[in-house]
Length: 563
Image (cartoon, rainbow, N blue to C red; front, side):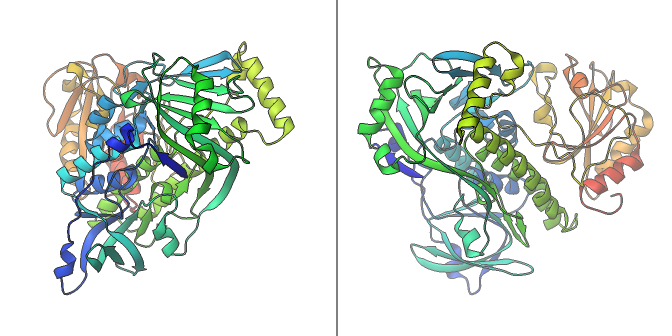
């Protein structure tokens, strides 16, 4: 990615510098071994460090830089990522500072051909998307990482790696010289170019797209609504595509398709960028050029995300085109999947093979993202005359026909992966309606007194039992709640009731005052769900069965038998 930064821009002004401190290992007689070391302090690495720390694991985070990222970079954070950030303790500042949006509009030439709404139904805590410059995300995560006790080490660059059966040894370069450090588990989140991946001789496989795009972040006081606008072949940039997004601080992100033959160094010069923006916005609108970058993109992934005690996450493990906002969003979901498994394995409460399912589940997610991202790219940038004729015909029809709108692909936006084929699932034996199959992420719903169901879930295994009244929960189930709480891998019981009532021993009671949770979970009285620590469904039944629950818990934690 080729970049340019103007000295007076908000990006330049918002560059907090983090303090380098001499690592304590310089005074040690032998390398110190740490339970978890994370390499890379981008959004994904910081999330991995926070989540691991919240689960009780001491964490060292190494980064070769001492500042947040330049430019907007990662921009669109999907509802599922916002729920994960809520669980990590970073969701409120992100949503308060960012630009919330749900509506996207698509144009062909100068005409709007259709629009969509990411959250067509009400009663969700978070919007479909929040736009926020990546440097803000990183700053909020750094604050949170400090608060939970992550050992943050800036200007610490890993220059050698030696994986061993029971740990990983790293050689780290700093302003004070080099030192060795050992990790029982190493999480690699050092970006698409991943120096550690190269040090290990590992590679990514896939497709590099022969096209170039210009990002121009522009500061202007515009009255455009907070929506995603995408143009195919607009009159101000004929033959190409353009994307417009609003960000915080009156910064607007514009992506111009340039074509493969464009000179990246020439295209990011102000004398080339400013006329493009004026052609789009009109001569009368004042703006300041903030940050410029020219990029190409690829859809690739590693063959495996786990290599012994080395675990890859985010762009270090997989890369997609920016269409659909799947980069950082899929990275947050990597961390969400990994941290609870690492906690159980590190504590000896789950077999080592549970970490293999991190690779398996997130490779399935990466393949899904790569497929959708490739389809988006092929539609946006057709590489043959026939492909362009087909695309333009679809766009013409989309203005009047619903069937054609389903074929328009200006970047199918990030959706959480359903781990439908995961070995950790217990298959349905009872009939259910709705989308919450085993492997699906839990659905949100409003609770009494302004609470949200999604905030009550995550961080541990949980059992949801639906009831009309808390007093109607069967006595055997109440007695079993105490058994579940004392298991080697504890399960917290939550009763979701349609109305308030008496307390239930060994369980939390949540009141589904509007009935939304019961509707979304198809939760008749007596229905039971087992929810994983990453808020995904592990199993569900129409009646409480302690033996079935223990067997499902065993399966969900990689054991051969019930826990």
